[in-house]
Image 1 (cartoon, chains in turn orange, green):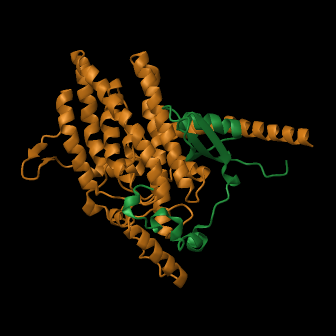
Image 2: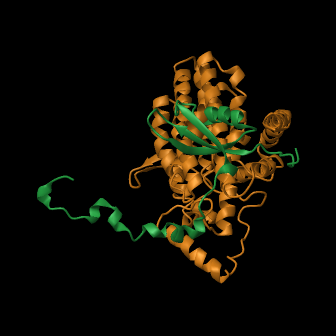
Image 3: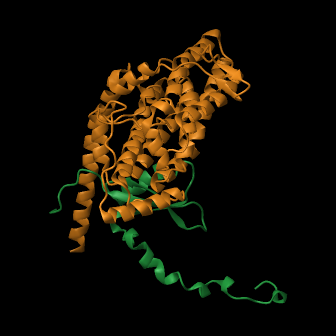
Length: 340
Length: 98
């Protein structure tokens, strides 16, 4: 779930100018021409095929950010496992969080096919060099937040991830197909949990509305800045990594969500939200991009805590990783001795 | 052990048979300390929704692959042998299905 629908430069400010493509040597020009032909024909690039450095770098950055988002996304929901209101909801939440771990693994594996190691990627995350979806830098204050994450955050992620199933890089596309298959459960369980709350007490209904109020705009921002302010999008489109622009995806999400909110009985916190007959879409208000960029750049309410929790979990798991390796080595030695 | 101590668990390729009668199909990869560990991880990661009845794990380093750069020359010998396909042969209609 959970990717930002655009690629943020790791550890750099957005919009930094990039040098034009460096001139190619002759043999590279031939390889580049072949690569372009494959992309133009909507073909797939596989790990050991030649690809331009910039394509590889963009993919590593995007896929690893996506993987990090899955892993960090386990934290706000994981916080609620011990506080789930029933055994049923607890079992569901555990299954969902486990899925997110799996999604992280599919994506790390896809990124590793590009020649980067798992340790390098984890290191980039843990040192704060790599970005992850800014949506997880907000707190989950009450149980309704867990439902809203499923309904809206996963809902937004699905919108973004379905076109990624057709991405030009084979391993990424295949990972996304697997992720999307599992994602539908995430959105539906969240929505259903909220439906149940909306049949409850006035306080429970208020909790749902409060969670929707806090998450709605942040979910809209997940799709990334307007296409006009998103220079990387054009290149992503050219390479077949990105298939649909940020604004179109956001509009699809709004159009799909408004009727769902009505059935649920909550109000989406946007006074400008109204049906536009001429466009055949819902109009919506202005997104606060300053807040969005502040969070992306590390100044959200939970950035430090999320990263610290993640690093602590990794460090505390070190002995398990080392012990497993030591055990494997010992077994191997024993077998060799027996064979000798 | 004279091999340098690994920090990362080795990489394994995972193949899953989705049901009896079908072949094992490559479905992804994962890191694990040894084969048994890899099998357990593969079960947890790739068959959480009963997607499999059998799993193979293979160390990624044990796979020998054809070179993508020589794709054309490597597979070329098959390209001009269209007589290997049944559609190469014209059979009178009255013979019916063959």
